[in-house]
Image: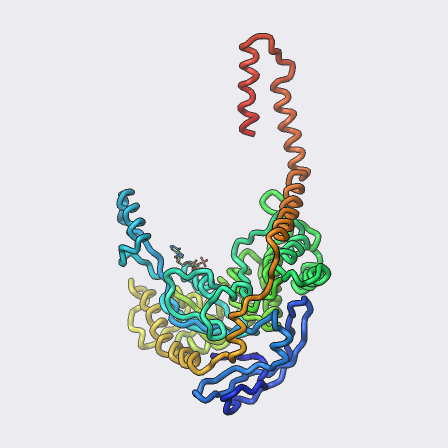
Amino acid sequence: MDFNRDVEISREEEGVISVLSPPSMGTMQIAGSNGFGHSIEFMSQAYTTNQEGNSEIIIEEEYLSTNQDGLLPIFLKFEDVTFKVRSIPASSKNPVKVMMSKVASQLHMDGEHYKPILKGITGSIGPGEILALMGPSGSGKTTLLKILGGRLHENVKGTVTYNDIAYNPALKRRIGFVTQDDLLLPQLTVEETLVFAAFLRLPSNMSKQQKYVRVDMIIKELGLERCRSTRIGGAFVKGISGGERKRTSIGYEILVDPSLLLLDEPTSGLDSTSANRLLRILQGIAKAGRTIITTIHQPSSRMFHMFDKLLLISEGYPVYYGKARESMQYFSSLRFVPEIAMNPAEFLLDLTTGQVNDISLPEDLRTPRGSLEFEKDIIKYLQLKFKVAIEPKEKASHRVTKAPEHLQSAVQVKKDWTMTWWDQFFILSKRTFKERCRDYFDKLRLVQALGVAILLGLLWWKSTTGTEAQLRDQVKFLKPVEIL
Ligand SMILES: Nc1ncnc2c1ncn2[C@@H]1O[C@H](COP(=O)(O)OP(=O)(O)OP(=O)(O)O)[C@@H](O)[C@H]1O
């Protein structure tokens, strides 16, 4: 496992025999739980070997004490991750059969109708790094992201460890997840959104002032100063731009200092300049000691070079895992070489779909171009090469590198964020009240309500209620009022 830009070596554990690689010095910005950043010195490639012959990453005491309740370095390893979903046979159109099949699968009575989604994914990532998950639509990127974030457990096989410890509920507060579709409230401003989130999600032992300072710091870090007082907006409310919206969602998550940040398509819908800017921000967030994993569709070549690691998935199988900048070299060593100038991401995605026009092919790939099996064979070829050339090395590196014991125990300790039920109720009520008031007193809505009121008033205007029939007619008009 490549723990580049790792943390300091110097703590001498019992049983440690020797330092394997000479560490190199650097500086790292760490955001502490109190909302202030810390600049600390660090040395990279920090491994030692203990008596069992395992390599271990050692971190200086000072580093741990600085971040006791804040940023904890997380080294994530995943091995042979598979996931399948229960599927109902498409041929079955009979609703009774479909229902029976559903009931049977609920009761775990059928073992056959499963559709494999992920088929043995292996890799690792450490603090300070960004891992990009790339692959065609439907290849399983989001599913893998959910598994790594501890959001999907059922029907998952393989191992996922955080500092060599399996997922446990204490990790929930150390993992941030930015989904494709955010849940921001349209009527609140960017600043209000983050302030409410700070009051809801930051530890109760932080003072109000510290929470405001933290929000201010996030706004500056994410370049949201210009739009801090602009409403988020939505379908009917004009608001901030798409890029600002994505950055606000990221701010919402990094507010609580997650050690592991997972992002699902953070650049979708953004122009290349905004996407670039967002990735630069993510780079800064990673450099502060966080581990970042992001799914991405088709990054520009500039963006592609900002990733430290790349995991390429095709139909649920891995076809490349390693340093992003070495991916082209790997495929050219397999004799897949672009014949014209190509964006690396475009070239890699072409390979994962088996559409290899303008790409020269290895000689041992015998299927002729244009044949029915051609695309499938390309994908199979790449999957096989991964199994032989990449997977064994990565697995071996998982065996020999171990996170130090104090980091292993730290991931099992829950961050203390005790907030009373009443406090939560109060903050949520205040937020809802503000949101609803703005919504109801929105100018457009007021004009709309006034228009409808005048129209309805006209229905009864100058009408008489002398007879029973006239009275019945008036009651009939109540129906459209009910609908409106
Ligand atoms: N719970 C589920 N039930 C049935 N099928 C599922 C389920 N979850 C995922 N899938 C299927 O698994 C495949 C992978 O889905 P996933 O969302 O991970 O793909 P993706 O690579 O993130 O795609 P995109 O880039 O379009 O977001 C898809 O074919 C999807 O339909």
